[in-house]
Amino acid sequence: MSTFSPELEAFRARAIAFMEPHLAEFGQAARNGLSLDEDIALARRWQATKQAAGFAGITFPTEYGGAGLGQLEQVIFVEEESARGFPSPYFVISLSMPIPMMLRYATPEQKARFVPAALRGEQIWSQLFSEPSTGSDLAAVRTRATRDGDDWILSGQKVWTTFAQYSDYGVIVARSDPDAPKHRGLTYFFVDLKAPGVTVRPIKQLHGAEEFNEVFFDDVRIPDAWRLGEIGAGFRLAVETLMIERYTAASDETGFGPPLEALIAIARDTAINGRPATEDGRVRAVIARNWAVQQSLSSIHEKSVMELAAGREPGPEGSIHKLVGSRGRREVAVCALDLLGPGGLRFDAASHPRPKTDFAMSWMDQPTLRIAGGTDEMLLNTVAERILGLPQDYRPDKVAKA
Image (tube, rainbow, N blue to C red; front, side, top):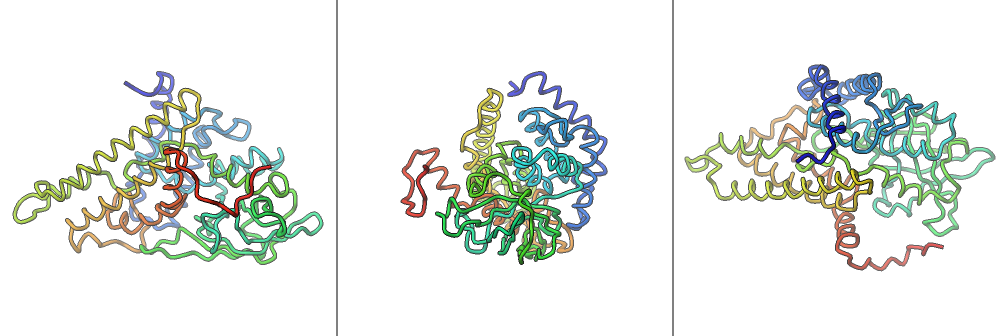
């Protein structure tokens, strides 16, 4: 029985009919072997192609170039797009966090200037929250925003900023009142990442890619008109930003690694003590355990889709999805590499990582997933407090709500 109505399944058919003719140019096979620069250039063309066909910004208002549809259409489109390996991830941050915040709080002139361009792939946006000494504790940011007439002067450093070297703009939280309690002394802005005083330094990862960056702000001037929300409301808006991206098909039961069927295929072609690896108890245990886990995660995803279909917000179960999926990805990758032997670690360092199709890349890249978007420790807290109902840890730094 389908979770979706006949109308939504008709939308799925329309989305697939749009995607299939573009598969050879933009799908996973076309991306294999591309450098990061080449892959992002391809992604920009794919984004423009989607926008021209009315499939960019599925939930965005039509007056800004979106499709004006609902969350369920977004779930369906992302599900089909991800299954075909289209280069959409480069715009996930832009279109799920900064641009929706702009639609909520920016002026009509700013929306008209930035939103359509982002939907066409002409702009990439970053989210500048984390700092070297303030990762999970967002309220402790030290980057300063000092008022200077009608402008603000930004000074400080952000880190782990995804694709900042390719970004045109970003949303940033900075400390505008050093004397206020830390949750109340922050203000939310958007900033031109090509402005004088902005320095972006890529961080090289284990597999050679540079998806993350340090970003330095040396007396960067931004107008007060680029402030979103009230002065001092930055913490609330930052939390709102992180909550905007609702639970969608982008949550992957494999932890965004290769499918379990790829491990089974390797096991069938590999011998252990003269017998197929599929007959080895240790290999069978990995396959069985991860099959059971992925079925459970699929059920969590199904529940979230049903919540959306009923007009309700999905709950915190997405934390389980990310936490367990990323751990399973590591176990599956380690088992595959053990079976492949030294040859399994061969990879082209000049090529963009392919964690969905390459077990070596998946193994080297998976620690990123266990940090980005919430560390394992933060997710465990969410599961403990919001799902199991356990009491929160004592937080002497947390200011009670007025």
